[in-house]
Structures are given as C-alpha cells and as structure tokens.
Image (cartoon, rainbow, N blue to C red):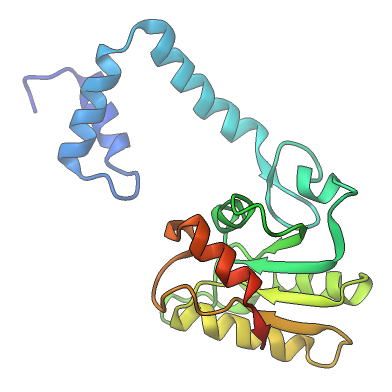
Amino acid sequence: MSEITQSVTDLIGELAKLPGIGKKSAERLAYHILRLNKTEALALANAIRNVKENVRYCSRCYNLSESEECLICQDPRRDQTTLCVVQQPRDLMALEQTGSYHGLYHVLLGRIAPLEGIGPDQLTIDALVERVRGGTFKEIIMATNPTTEGDGTSLYISNLLSELPVKITRLARGITTGSVLEYANREMLTDALSGRQQF
C-alpha cells in the first residue's frame, strides 16, 4: 500500500477491525469517508467520541444508557411485575420495536459459552438473581437466543430462580432455532412474545 498515505492506511486498518468488515469493505468505507465534506466526516468522528465518552451500562438492567439508569428503568408506566432477560442491548431494542412488551428488562451482556471460556460469573447473572429476590416480579421471561448456548444460559438461570415465587417463561418458538433475535422481524418477535410458555 505504498501508493496511499499513512493516514488512509491507518483508517483502513482501523475500519477492518470492525466485525463483518473485511479489507475490501474497509477500503470502500475509507474512500467514502474521504469523499465526505469536512463537517460530515467530523460529525461521524464526534458521534464515535460521544458514544465512547457518554454511554455506559444502566446500573439496574445493564441496558445502554447515558445516565445512571436507562430510560426504560426510569419509566414508571412500565409493568414492574414482568422482567424480560435478554443477552445483549440490541436484543432489547429488537423486542422494544415490536411495541408489544411493556415490562422491564435485564441484559446479561452475553451467554454462557464454555468453549469460548465464558462462564456465568462473566455475565450479569448474579445481579439478575439479586434483582429478582428484591423485586416485585411475578414473571421472568427468558428471551435468550434460541441457540445451544442461549438455551443453556436460560436453563442455568431458571435453575437459580426455581426456589423463588416467580413464574419463569420463555419465548415461543416462532423464532427459528439457531437464529439471532437481532435479525428476527417484528411480526416474528410479536408472536414469540405473545405465545411464550412455561420454562
């Protein structure tokens, strides 16, 4: 790459580190950024800086937030008796887009994956159990991805909560096994929420 400047080479290298972006895609993105006017390019840079400086995990549910608690946890209109457990903030966003769930959430920040060295202690499972023990929840909806690791994580959590006076449900299998919530369409997620069943 001796024919391009070091700044462009560095930009391509950084973009290529993003998930799903190979060398060719990184080059296309870099040249797109070069074609942007200075205001647009700096707006992108500022948006990245703002996310890194201002976004943190909610102290209650571990959703993304710019304050101590996220907007969902702060909303008194949410059903305080139902808690939906998801793997990642993007899964929460997918469920919220259905408009059919009005309870609270708990984000695990991953799933138990022994082959990748991810155990329960690396997730927010302890915080979830404490939250359920100290809360007024009547139902816990296990909305982990319908994969081997997602199902294993749900089973592990349901065993921890089995002694508590809460109903544990899981999403109906309107979502294909092996798929990821983030890519499910609105109708599929709505059906899965409304057809949830005892775990």
